Length: 376
Image (tube, rainbow, N blue to C red):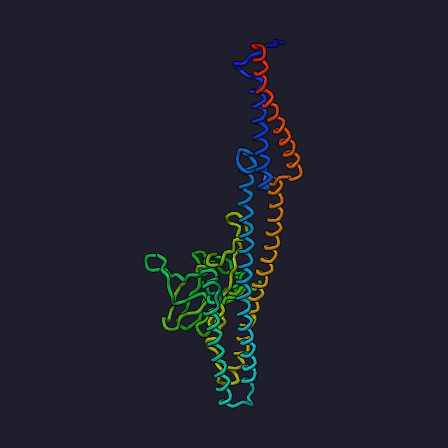
């Protein structure tokens, strides 16, 4: 081994200083981790880990927001269900009055008094229908219901929208598509058929009835499709009701796109419940009103049941989202959080190495002085 003594280049000091620089950098990194609590403070610490952690942070924030969205959805269903509960209470009172009026022991004057209360209740039902809202979105007037459009064909075969007839009630069993009807001049209605004689939209088991500007189609499995003909326009002829899967209130239940749930709330008003033409002038008409009001109670009950199902689903969604968020937060912690005990051990080691390096650099800087002794 070469054994020389030089003063031009102090290799011992250079080598000692190199190790001191390394220990200084390690010590600074350790201090940074201990101060921040993270083992990944910049991309240079762990490029892949940084990319993964940032993506997970975004996912966690989105999950938290989705959980809040679901909670907002629960509030929507509760607001709508509370309003429907009041409407149902009024319907039950109306039914009680109809039963009372159907008794011939009451006079026409008594029935007029009954009718006055009925009219007041109908106005309140329509007021609740138009005024019930959540964050400026009306809930019971049909704004949160699937959209439907009535079209007629002109002489050129082109479809044009018409306001002469409107779909006022269709339950969840009615699928999106086209439904054809023929409105006759005498107020009756028939199924519209295609060139092959098949009913458009309706099955062969469907039954159609028409009374008081109301056209109702019923079928198996609770299928109900009801339209109202505008008496002022005196609409007649062939019409196609186009029902779309749009118009519902989407609730974002996931951290990614298209992870939604649609809330559909049917219109709850005197028109959609067929209460707009109730007659309480005779015992017979009161008897018919009983049937109409009972069906209205059933429709509101069905709507409330659907809202209850939405609320239960949303509550499960909140629980699931919170659980997923907790799991992802734990996974993120394992990637980015520092083990304080392990890092403290590393810090102590680097601190000792730094002190040793400083001492060695000091001693290495004294070596040229020993060489100078040879010149004395």
